[in-house]
Length: 126
Image (tube, rainbow, N blue to C red):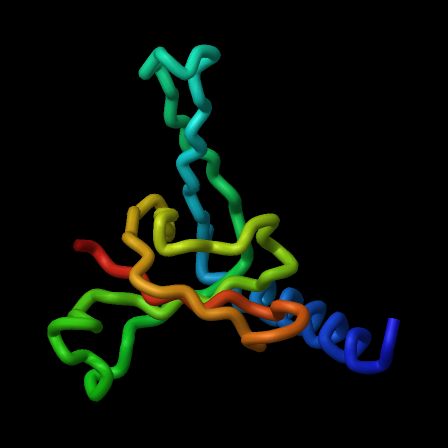
């Protein structure tokens, strides 16, 4: 492992510790897994949600970022420690914060390349 990798690993651990210390509640990602039927001719596929729990924090967007279209009043910025979550969130998933369901509008990974330290999500009710 090179020096660059150990720095990212250290940063990932620091992010995990900080988001655990300042955890604002339970942040979950719900992903619906499609289980195909035994026969291709059958349309008996079943969809079962799987919930993954992570450590993180959520906050509202500042007024200057709310444009009423892309970012609406009530939307949240969610930061989740990548070390605490066994999946990478996707816009097809649902984010659950203290039992309230939000659609994921966008996902970014920090940093964009290399070892992911945190996932930043824009979530809202649509």
